[in-house]
Length: 72
Image 1 (cartoon, helix red, strand yellow):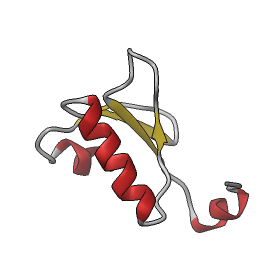
Image 2: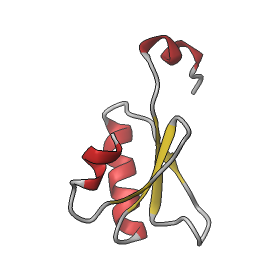
Image 3: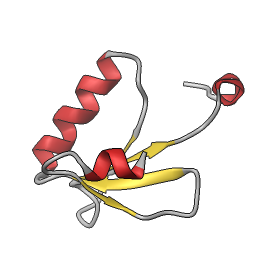
């Protein structure tokens, strides 16, 4: 997933040893737009509201059984 995100223009992923990848977009408005578009399709990712991470989103990587643990 890191390699795929790295290949997208305008996205800067940060390496991670965990089950998630933090990635930065060019602006907070772009991050909000991507977040809103994914959410409208039922894809949940983490959006940050603090000034240090306002241009960042975080996607978690899991397996199908992990989906049963998600509560919205």
